[in-house]
Length: 222
Length: 244
Image (tube, rainbow over the protein chains, first blue to last red):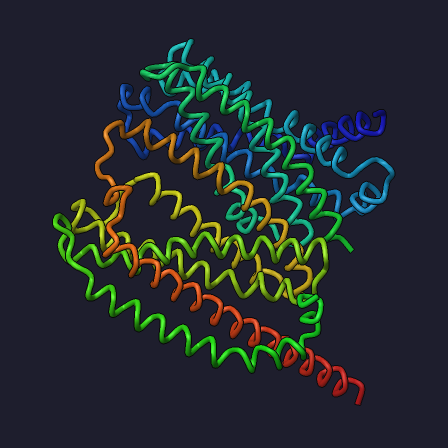
């Protein structure tokens, strides 16, 4: 337990320090959302309607951008080999690393959401709903994305290949995240249904993500 | 145990060399019978002759999902049993599966044009088929990104199994998403009960396409084994030249 806590502390500290690059994700999120009105036009009513979708897409792309580094930096300095060889089960270690990654890169996105909601003309309730769905949904993005990150590090390839592999897997999360936000804002549907399915997807990703990532690290590193 | 016997690539090559002509002949005969029966099948009272696209479209769609199942079994073979031919089977199945998915999409869109008045509709089935196609392409990209086949095999096996778990979830979410966005479905496929005049040609075509898959897959596996031998020989020659 102490080993996992130490790992989480270490990862967060590295991510927040100079060269960590966790906050670049927030900057990217901001830039993507600011770009949208230039493509769509400054129509406030339209932006309100598309707001939740834009915020979710931005968060999805921003979390994808930072995934690359989850295992790559540890692989470069050799600490990943030590982590794989240590007595702590690799599944737990992967889960701890994903949790640390989410705390360092995912939570800032959620904190930035209210400001971005303002830019997209969303009212307070709508913004809070989107932030709530992101709070529940972004861990799922991190935990499924971790599989791609683990594959990428064993293949010594990152970037575009990672995006191509991970994006189709995140479609369900996107569907239910946007559906829950829209249901709360305007939709005829109850908020509870898509939101509970989103929670379920997150829980499923907690199970699948660490096992698949650990399997690919164990098989792939040599 | 037969699978263990086949672990020797040379034995696999000699066995498939004997089987393949028979399989190819059976495929050709079944395809001929199926095509004849499809052509002879009556026109639908609503859809006219376009209903015959179904005899190509549906077997392709079935096989597109079946091939992912084959790859998942092969992935287990790679990760659990370390069967030497499992990664060859998985690697060669991916492009064939992608081709079946692509054909299902294309025939579906050609069928959709006269029936629904559009080539593409964001219908749940079409969308999940498109995502399946994207996942096939991602898997092929993964195979092609890495030079060392055994390293790529283990990564691709993990991805195939994750895909096998995720594909039903994606299918379910897309169904849900579609019913949310389109309360009144624009179309319904022919109806759940299919007349015997259509059912028999369809089953024959499904069998013919399955045989086609087995034939193509075995042939592709042979090619892959030979390709790896050529590569090994070339590398051996290169090291020998370097030493000389």
